[in-house]
Length: 105
Image (cartoon, rainbow, N blue to C red; front, side, top):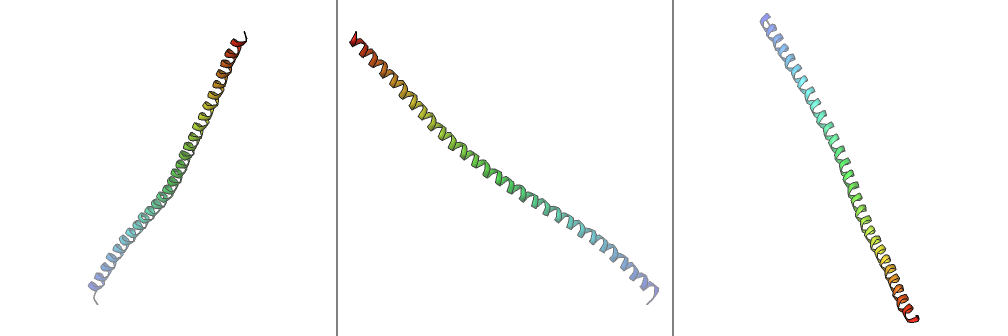
C-alpha cells in the first residue's frame, strides 16, 4: 500500500466524518421537530379537553336558565291568578254591599 492509497483512505474517512456530522445534526433537528410537534399535540389535546368541559358547563347553565325561566313563568301565572281572584272577590263584595245597602235604605 502506497502513500497515495493512505491519502485516499484518509480523505474518504474525512468525508465520512463530515457526512456523519451532518447526519447527526439532521437527526437532532428531527428530534427537536418531533418533540415540538408532540408537545404541540399534547397542548392541543389538553386545550380541546378543557374546551369540551366548558361547553358542557355552558349547556348545563343554559338548561338551568331555561328551567328557571319556566318556573318563573309559572310563578308569575300563579301571582296573576291570585291577584285576579282577590280583585274579583273585592268587586263581588262591593257589588253585594251596593245591592244589600240599596235594599236596606
